Image (cartoon, rainbow, N blue to C red; front, side, top):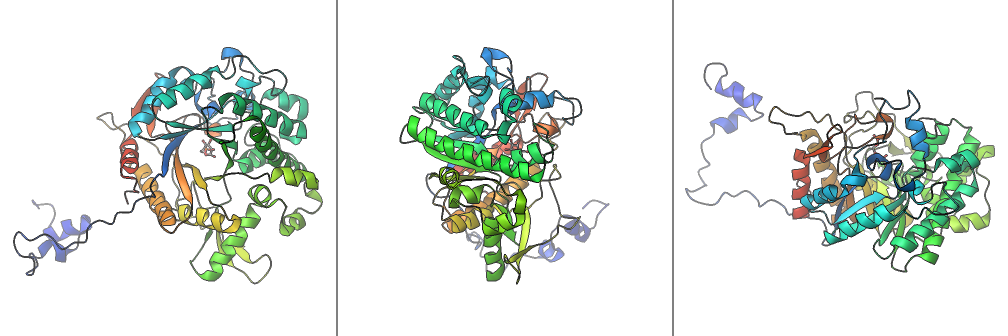
Length: 490
Ligand code: BG6
């Protein structure tokens, strides 16, 4: 090295060993002979694995006053001062309502064959119930036609948190079974109208989040801080809405529609991989998801859940449990971060949860702790605990700072690091036979990230919200390569 660094010091800085730097070629390696290094292992996903990206209506569509759309609890909430960190709202968001053709073009560029989006309930039923808006599904008709013309299969979510405000005003939203029934009516209507083109439907997105954050902690819309008994009832009503929707879609939609939830499963991971801890993580997976996933898959609240809830347990009937657990075709898991590192315990119900050290690493969102093994353990444990044969990773991805480099590009190596490691662990799961059939990256493009507004960026495409210009980040090239190779690229 010229002047500044010795050869040895450079080697250290570059992460190489000084031995390697000074070594002469091994004697056994004859000139011209092929290097003896092993060929790179072909860590591929199963044939037919579905690669996609995910978005949701309120986060990207904009056009909140067009074609007779009613108002949603998120319109109301986002317009209340102080609720959204950067003071923004989603009145315009990505203007996807008008730019959907360009956005389908982005999907095509990525080479994905699937796209998870959500239908805005207040576009279809402006008041949540009553008469449907005649123009309510026109936008989705156009979107579906554009997707299918480009060889991209639509995966529709029916509820991604944009509850019609009228249902909140009249019934307290999910505090009432009226909302569960209105949701089923809307679900059946959408499936009846779009079921000729949409073959996979997610009922509710992240029940755990919209219930606990919206009705318990008051962080998300509708911004309520209700007692635990009411929160438990809200969760029960949401589960009931899911079950009633499954029944309505089966009754009104076509027989070939596949159905399931997209849930931010409480992600339990064995702290250390021993048989005892794995067993403990199975128990934890069931118990920590007792309020939603377990009740819809098992048809009952666990004894531990009911004992813990005590007098706050949700009121329910046997008939409701039967509806809630109507058979579904798959489970969608939104997997971002490890939530509980678990070890075996002697006491009931058989596990302890370890505290997170303050120095545990996270991505650009504080909640987004880095635990790639979550993408291995969570689907593996879910498949075992509930005997599942079809799982989709309905969301996975990360926020990043995403600064524009002087050359105008975005080198989001941190997002690539995150995705590469999570995908490698997911591939490990599929290689072991865990029935994960597809993966939807959150998100296609930067969008309105709820309480974080427009500042937390999760997209493969950068969005300039002033000009609406979409620019691919380096991670878009990374993901295109993953999709093309059907491999994690680890
Ligand atoms: C999931 C949601 O919770 O994670 C998405 O289903 C959301 O809608 C994503 O955008 C990121 O969460 P957040 O809270 O950081 O915006």
